Image 1 (cartoon, rainbow, N blue to C red):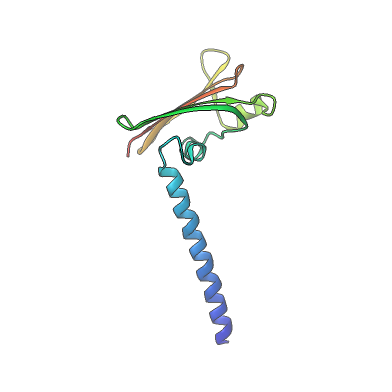
Image 2 (cartoon, rainbow, N blue to C red):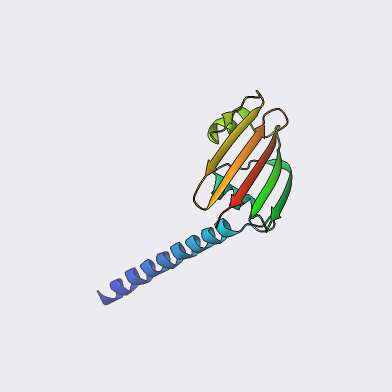
Length: 129
């Protein structure tokens, strides 16, 4: 009986440590503002916009304004753009080929703009914390 309790406790402790490890890792990604480390993951966590197969990326981060601007060129041969627009809940703007998603939260705000024809996805994140 004592061995079973020790084994169950060890398994529970293991899963608890793994859970805290994943939580800490996700917080590290969420708080990474630079364009170097975890750039795409940070953008996906902050905006809810999935970054699909891309051809190129250009990113800048201004520390004084705490603003990240990233431009992705989506590989339109590998991504169904209509499905992508629906899955990411992008809303059509006044121009037919432009789709937008934006939000202003407590600790950050963002705006994503997708040109459906060229596959150019511009994302701007302003970090408030």
